[in-house]
Image (cartoon, rainbow, N blue to C red; front, side, top):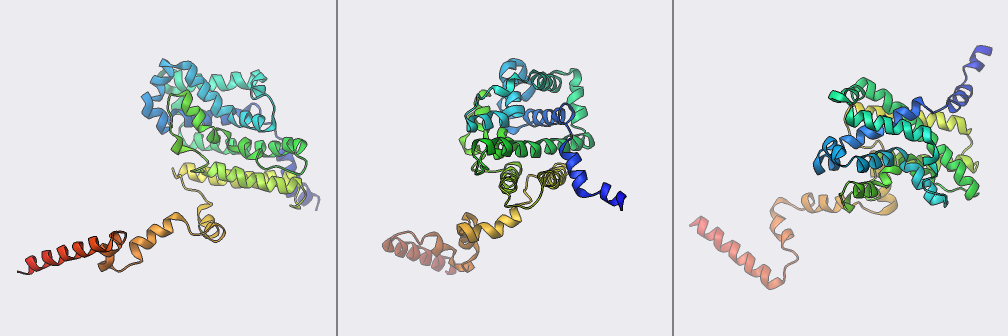
Amino acid sequence: MDLISALSLGELALSFSRVPLFPVFDLSYFIVSIIYLKYEPEFVCLAGAVELSRRHPVASWLCAMLHCFGSYILADLLLGEPIIDYFSNSSSILLASAVWYLIFFCPLDLFYKCVCFLPVKLIFVAMKEVVRVRKIAVGIHHAHHHYHHGCSAVPCPTGSGVALLSNLEQLLRGVWKPETNEILHMSFPTKASLYGAILFTLQQTRWLPVSKASLIFVFTMFMVSCKVFLTATHSHSSPFDVLEGYICPVLFGAAWGSDHHHDNHGAPHGSGLSTQHSGLPAKAREELSEGSRKKKTKKAD
């Protein structure tokens, strides 16, 4: 009985929540973040990631720091605190800078090739999700001191701050693509951070009857499983897509795609012409139908 109690989920979750993040987990977070920066499509299309980093190393370093610490910057902005306050942590800055230098400037690209080896990369991805969930939990704690009734708008950026600051990061690279705004096209980490922020807010306000350590453990396992699977299969889909496909049309009306599907498949095959030109005036439709009849008569002759 003592062995079972010693191996209980509560004790395991409590021990897991007390594991320090620096330096091992933070190192993994920096590595994965800067790897994504290096082979980001917009970054490569501009001039080539390595070429751009050598021609504009300061811009490349600033982009890397934004990828590593963007969540802290955005959270400080929302809480009315100095946005460069986290940069006073010299150990984290030096560690992130060392990772940036090795990924972009290591001879023969050896460091980049080693950390991108899939089994190694999956370990780093899993450890990054540990940091992400811990950031959301810490964001709830800080937000609760500023907004005592709970605020999930602050922990969400702490979990996916760099994605929300993607347009600012593009400006640092000389690229401006407002249509890639993360709010318009939310990725899985951003959605998961939002849902996680809601769960942690409910737990903080005691609407969710579970301990904070247990919620951190369970949500971390969920994030690690999903992200490792998506990375291993090179998938960009979201596990929430199926659920959102059922719930969103009920809560927010029919999706845009349903109208398109109805236009293409809801009418008989012979009605394509009438559907295509249904917006034309009556006289124009009559002339068009008269022209089609003449063409058919010529073919029959």
